[in-house]
Length: 130
Ligand SMILES: Cc1noc(C)c1-c1cc(NS(=O)(=O)c2ccccc2)cc(C(=O)O)c1
Image (cartoon, rainbow, N blue to C red; front, side):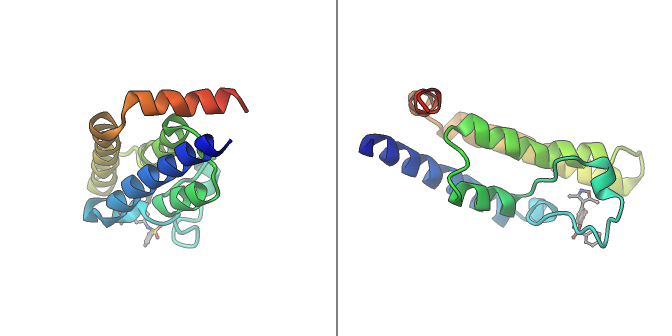
């Protein structure tokens, strides 16, 4: 009903705000767009679920997420994919893994500091009712 739509509208505002702040952080520039398959031709042979910050934003606008947990599951693919595709000890791989870990820690810190757990519980009730 209307109150549920108000809650989900507030969820989308919260998730858009997080995603836009991450996209403005220069450390995370490589994560703002899908990995370019012309530049990285074997990427889709290794990574089964590509994800990036612009795709998160599209998903938010398409009302894909009803809880913060669902958003986090997709956001986690961004850094997990980077760790999986760039496992080697050479400086380039180490550098992208360092940025991937910074992204993981930053998302978690924002959620810990800014998400009201009662609000997430209301979102989970809506998810279970649908
Ligand atoms: C993410 C990700 N996961 O695997 C890799 C590898 C990256 C990644 C992707 C990008 N952006 S891109 O796919 O459009 C691109 C790749 C190669 C040359 C020029 C552009 C940049 C970087 C970077 O370190 O700058 C890294």
